[in-house]
Amino acid sequence: MSFTASTLSGSKPEQYAQLAAQARALVHGEPDRIANAANLAALVYHALPGLNWVGFYFYDGNELVVGPFQGLPACVRIALDKGVCGAAARTRQTQRVADVDAFPGHIACDSASRSELVVPLVHGDALVGVFDLDSPNPGRFDEEDQQGLEAIARIFLESLLESLP
Ligand code: SME
Image (cartoon, rainbow, N blue to C red; front, top):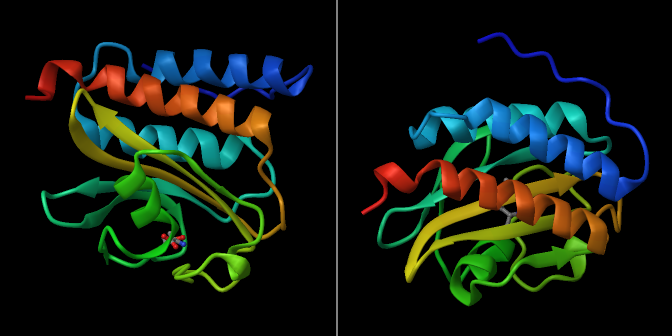
């Protein structure tokens, strides 16, 4: 399959609908989580403006371990009681942080990061990991970004269904 990301256009919800369609096409028929995480990180990183890190952490039963991503090298392991990623994994609620410097325990993998969105990846009762996006711009993510990126996270989870226990 060849894939060329087309430019997103229209309102922000319309752009996220186009991005979701591209994401579905990328993972179609493929259950491998590394392959799908890698392609979705690349898709989102290149499609959306104002991002310096997009990627996945996977839960190993004890802590979060970095998976496929785009951006600078990142912290490898994050305990569930640490940082924005840990908070998303522990609470199983999306964490939308407008100012990471004001978030207690934020882990600065890339000192350029100013705002962050972390979507937990949960299948049934099982924590799979988190989908993490960082921006060098304060307040980069609004409610529409959150909804659009939660939809991308769902597409990732649905792609795994054959390979999850
Ligand atoms: N800032 C995150 C750590 C992961 S990096 O941003 C890639 C956190 O506080 O959990």
